[in-house]
Amino acid sequence: MAFVGVISFVVVLAGCTSQVAKYNPKESVGKQVDYTITGIDAGAGEMATTQKALKVYGLEQHKWQLQASSTAAMTSTLDKKYKKKQPIVVTGWQPHWMFTKYKLKFLKDPKNVYGSSENIMTIARKGLKKDKPEAYQMLSRFKWTPKQMSSVMIKVNNGMAPEKAAKQWIKANKKQVDSWTKGIKHVKNVPFKMTYVAWDSEIASNNVVAQVLKSLGYKVTIQAMEMQPMWASVATNAADAMVSAWLPNTAKTYYEDYKSKIDVVGTNLKGAKVGLAVPTYMTTVNSIEDLK
Image 1 (cartoon, rainbow, N blue to C red):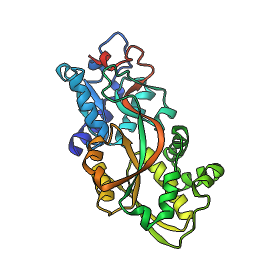
Image 2: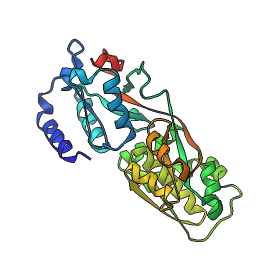
Image 3: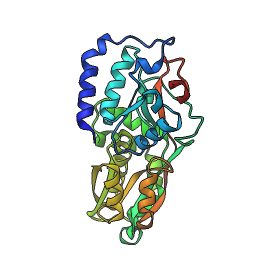
Image 4: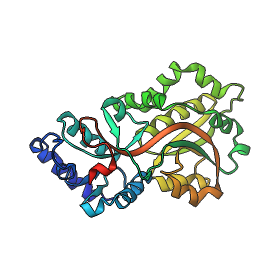
């Protein structure tokens, strides 16, 4: 990842934020944000799609660039800009707590570069259904909504430990969680490894699933990775499963690379969305076309 560039970018922002004017609807948005889209990890599928969007919409010809950073750096920058009603364009996705904490809007994508919607899929290693059928059955039943995922994310963002936030959600949604585990035989200290990308959404889902599997007797470990190693870990049997596969667009490349070596268990969340987002106070910016 381009950490050197990220550090210098953040330092510049920290030093000049107080001098940046509020969003001006009469001025070019490109000039106001230095023709920069604030992104996340360089290896994220969303970043590759955004690079494609820059070309498809002709934004590269208008000096636009995508700045790689991290989810934490992006949301920190968004927070500082939002509080002062300054302009910013970010790579966004839902579910995510930032759409709960801030008033944001996705920019329209008339050329459909980002696709209409995403599903988050559960992926297992080959042979898991036979080796650990109880865990496989629970994973096949795991389904929740963007609103439910966001409720866990916002607690974590407010400082609660992910494990505690997951336990609170499970307690408050006992009937739903019981439907994931009903009739499943309990095991005793059977190791189970999950991998995930350290996005706020995946921190929420993995901690919830880990707690449910623990209630069935599994000795669960969860490990954060970049996206490519996450897929490789399941495909090579180094990990048992993941619940973090955003398809058909975000993780398309990795799915194509590993689809013959994995087991698609099912969809755990429908209606996810990826795209470029801006604060709603940027009233004259409603489409990616408006960035020109």
